[in-house]
Amino acid sequence: MSRLLAVGSVAIDSIKTPFGARERSLGGSATHFSVAASFFTEVGVVAIVGGDFTEQDEAVFHERKVDTAGLERVKDGKTFFWAGEYSFDLNTAHTLDTRLNVFGDFKPTLSPDAANAPFLFLGNIQPTLQRDVRSQSKAKFVAMDTMNLWIDTAREELLKTIAVVDALIINDAEARQLAQESNIIKAAKVILKMGPKFLLVKRGEYGAAFFSNDAYFATPAFPVEDVADPTGAGDSFAGGFMGYLAQQDHVDEESIRRAIIYGSVMASFNVEQFSCDRLRALNPEEIQQRINRFSEFTHFDLYPNMKSVNSAVKQLERR
Amino acid sequence: MSRLLAVGSVAIDSIKTPFGARERSLGGSATHFSVAASFFTEVGVVAIVGGDFTEQDEAVFHERKVDTAGLERVKDGKTFFWAGEYSFDLNTAHTLDTRLNVFGDFKPTLSPDAANAPFLFLGNIQPTLQRDVRSQSKAKFVAMDTMNLWIDTAREELLKTIAVVDALIINDAEARQLAQESNIIKAAKVILKMGPKFLLVKRGEYGAAFFSNDAYFATPAFPVEDVADPTGAGDSFAGGFMGYLAQQDHVDEESIRRAIIYGSVMASFNVEQFSCDRLRALNPEEIQQRINRFSEFTHFDLYPNMKSVNSAVKQLERR
Image 1: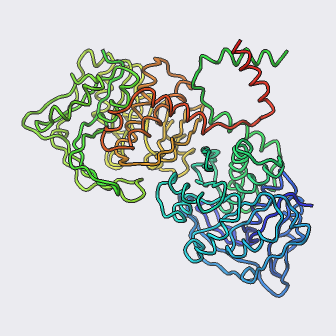
Image 2: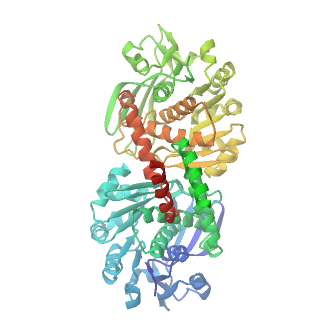
Image 3: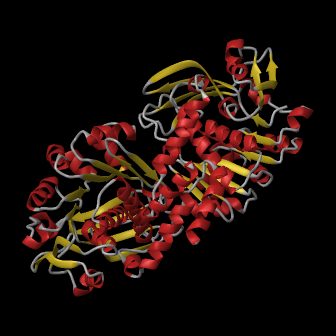
């Protein structure tokens, strides 16, 4: 049984960046999320694909032991297709083409097993569908993503959905747009009043910030020198975050802070190659190395005169 | 004698933000820098003002015990004037008017005392002038700022100047422009090859990153809920940074990390009110409070099972 269920899109992307292009690139929020999360816990995916979705496309899920029982297959339909281009700064995707295909009729129904997964991630799909999935699930911790399209066109439905999840995981611009407030600290307060206990703001190359009614945490991103394709960065971040929490089976401020670091590291790998290629080749030691480097490059010691105490302690530990 | 010398502009600004406007606002890089630095060490300012510069304008320097012996006064000239407007997101200043006035003829000459200050900050002025000041100074640690204008119009002179300083303190966009490289990690490598030992990249509301040939440090910004006027944020950051280093009289990676936190805190205060108003009303306890909060909101504990060891140590300390 999966500990973490991911509902969202599985897509075929066509992607152009200043550093390359790929015509048929496996993508979608549920894909990047579940592959990233699979390094930490048992993950199940709920999504829809068409008859054009090949065994080769699906291979990554099996390699990563992601449960695809919830992957609905529409033989005579085509898989959700997205074509996008990134300009030189890699920060913004310009959509060239979107074809919903079978995704337009996606009505996710959870199996009893899927409904029992204690952690649930609602990837970026229509907010009414997200809420419907949430109501089918018995999860004890539910996080969701959304996008500018739904903030613009389905605001009322979106607000109802945000009200029934534990955590909202969105980017900077979406948070400002949702709250209609340019200052991110004020925007976070507005959003927390909408109902979720936690708000996680993704800042791309600048890192992430976490807000609750009584806590604040911020971190820079893991520095990545060679970004090949930013597609799925946000979903792999959410995957590392939720995967770690599901593994720990314990959600409090301390585990959330650690989960954000794990999420950041998974996103840093995801962007290094197209599609899920980098995560496919990843091993746990590499994750641990970046986690440790994270500690190192964010560390500062305000009271260096305490160092003697710390080194004394280390000597103590060694005994 | 000053431990830290600041060379740059003292200006009269006219500023509009979505939250207010001020017609005659004391500004300039040397102003924001030296007022911020004055909380940490003895600061001297080298700049030029016109006959319109009043005792009231100058009061903040005296309040903060900034040495104004190097403030050149041109009775029949007018002070450098800048008019700017910030749009809703407060990230970018749109220049409405720039009148160099006496600043156009600024040829800084250091007094023997000024030349002996061990720390020197070259605020954003024409790079040939910066280099001239650098050659007059006997400082053991020199940092400089610059701007897109000089990167565009005086690149060769700028490169010669960058080659003879210890640290370059610029913003994100300037670093990418200077290096002609959009990835900031790659850009940093290009810039370090230009000669400086250290590169400090200011990221506004997202924090700061530090690069040397063998070190990397990044931090988010101190979260500010009420930004009244972003003018001088970068200079007050540099002021806190250099002020702290001059106070410690010791530059290594550890002290630089701490200095970045101090700089971030000074910038967070500076933006809360127009001009130097917030820094004028600031006391050292308030600085210390934000420094401590910085530790708290950036902290994560990767190995929580070590907590027992830490608490054991604290008990040990108490004995």
